[in-house]
Image (cartoon, rainbow, N blue to C red; front, side, top):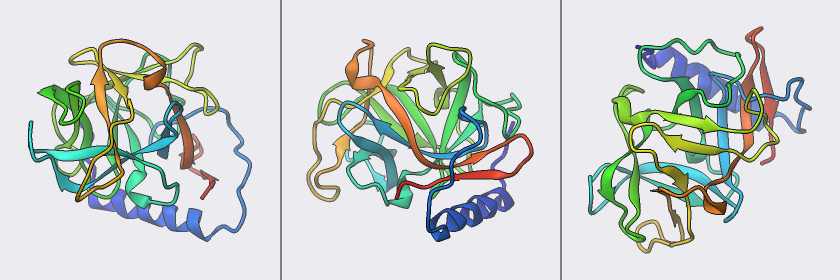
Length: 217
């Protein structure tokens, strides 16, 4: 297990405050996405960021909803990259292509999750945020699909759900009240242009434990 302790959450918040307080972007010293980093993920087809909030689905699982948002400056779009349950993912080590990881929502401590429920708008597979304090179950695990050895920050990649083999996707459907205009995020069985994602803003951890700030807000 890799418990998400309150101290770790406090550190993440401090790092984010440093990001917001820097007046100018600092050029990253490494090309890779690393374990322990806090990132925002952009769907390259629909130009929206992966997002969550303490709003539950009104159908399906009733778990915390996951959506796509247009705005770049919403702190509810930050996700922490972690190893899968019972496996160590050393902070600052580059994520390999094909590696199984978890995405933990910074604000609520719940993990990006999918399961055999239908999504509310498109009737694809529901994607939710699940668990407490960073611990959920085996359906929180996603494999990074990229073309090289490691997940590079400039690459558009796919995330394949290990438990059900769907790809994290957006096809453009929009919600009404209370999350009007936000896009549905769901799982699709086909690999296509709707399931490419790219890292945007974030706090990137190096093996030396010195964070790198990549601020595009």
